[in-house]
Amino acid sequence: MIRPSPRLLWSVLGLGCLALVVGSLGLTVWMDLRPCPLCIFQRLLFIVLGLFALAAAWLGRRRGALFPGLVVLSCALAGIGISAYQVWLQLQPPDSASCGGGALSLVDLVVDWLGERLPMLFLATGFCDDAGPPILGLWLARCALIGFSACLVVALWAIAVRRRSPELGA
Image (tube, rainbow, N blue to C red; front, side, top):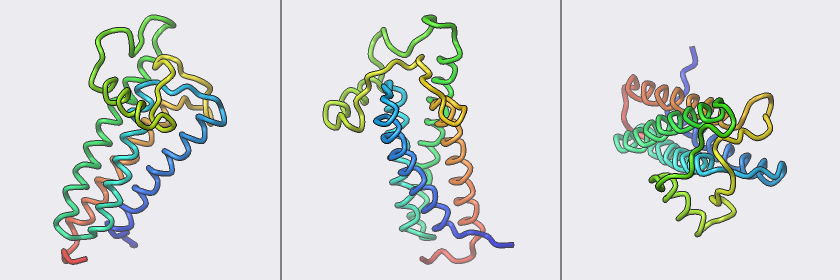
């Protein structure tokens, strides 16, 4: 049986996450979508996840690769939680739940700060309970939930393959 190397798994994961970000930017422009703060935060998580996965790939089987791998796991879990919350918001009756309106959360503060500095990438102009048009039959929040779940599985796989490997060199 062919067992992929941790380096290959981390590389595919990192490049896949960054491709998702580019795809989300393309969809935003092409379909004139208005991303909400949760959408923007998920975009940020995919960027961080992708960069740390590439760092783990670059480090290969060295001991230092475990730290970026753990960051990837943390980002994937956070993304699962945030995207699941957004899916839940979108399943509620209209105007019964929203991500805005109260005191600013940490997510809101981070998104606002990033939106001021890089508006093309991080400006939130939509509402979290607005599902928008489906893409391939799924709302984007559900696509993100699937994406973060896949990231978690691949990251766990890469860590498991690394642990079973006899050599810890590059």
